[in-house]
Length: 399
Image 1 (cartoon, one colour):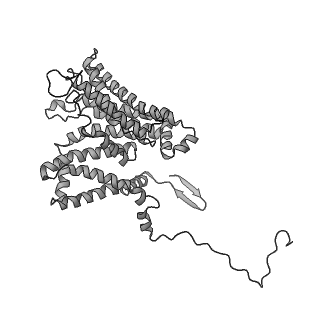
Image 2: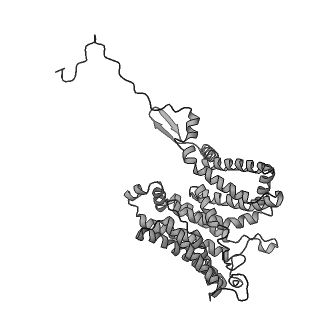
Image 3: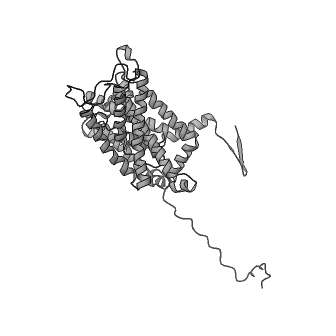
């Protein structure tokens, strides 16, 4: 144990147990935990107002999400949600908001299914090429938004969002006409050839979890994001830019190049999610199947909830996945609409959004904990000089 001498006091660095306890205490008392607890309490009030038993409803959510019949669905749902959350968290770490997840997602899916249908290579090679094609398509489309901001002055928030609409329209056209399965009444492509798919866990057991190895790819992406964010100079530049863009600019960070790199990485990950989706069940691209569930917005909520931190984003994305799947279980067992879980997600974000005025330094909750604001320290005026005491002599001898 090291000791640091500061003045007359000696401060000891905390040991591993003490450090873990401090981290646990910080997590329990964090604004995120407080926001989730507050949202659950408000949700309980809403449930009680509708005549439902809150405890029964929450138990149904937990059982539906983590029970033997629901854990596979929760893991499967976490692939697109956590993947999109990580994709949007990458630029968000630097204060950049990418709202074009839908466009990058569907372009990744289209590129992957096109390679899967027409590749002349063996199945294993085709799967790898399909994944890479999906990443490239999503990355290039996201980089276009960065170019529009840095070269043409179009705000990234606007360009990334508006670029999604032509992308989704183009993919819809391709699925409904050039790639449409012949004789099908559903706007969908042909089924991928046998072998051109991502293997699933426990697929041979008969039960089938429906969780493909895509979850491993998302886990690797999260690990890479964590290492780059915490252990590299590039990650430090990103975090420094997020904390103070002008300061980072003065320190020599090239904002235009950083934006381009972050957007390409973000779009590549979104495209990878689209590729994973089409290489899994039902092994084809169905028009609207990637955008209707709202993965982009749920992922953005998760990234905001975790302040774009790598591990926090994964946890928040999994939390929202569990809420989504648990909501279906709650609806089946208690007849409470599963839309309540969407309300809980929104309430969590609302509580979290007000933390700047509640939890942080100077917030009213902290001021309430300290009691009344004492105001600025009073100025102590020197006492009036005693006329009977002669004034001290100055350095100039009183001249």
